[in-house]
Length: 122
Image (tube, rainbow, N blue to C red; front, side):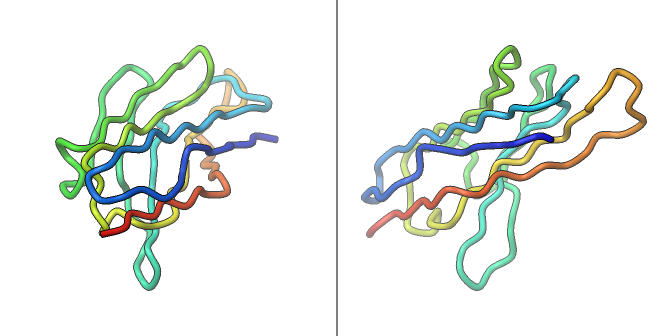
């Protein structure tokens, strides 16, 4: 069983910053991608940022230049530094990881955290 636990959400004013973290635990051989998604009320869940195990990253256009994703592979942890926050960044942020449970896994399994609320006031 694999568990992803997010932390760091909260209420901030526009222009402020938050740092989210997500730690994966359990029977894990390796993690390919780790990333962050968010879902605002009435909207579809969307990719915010993703980081591959060897360092490549990608971001939603709406957060480029403001958010930075990083990973500590030794700790199976991913972070999201969010700066210059805007009200439209408000939503529940979910951690996501593609996990190989064994060295002979034929594919990665996708796991999700429980989500952490980020609210940005105007």
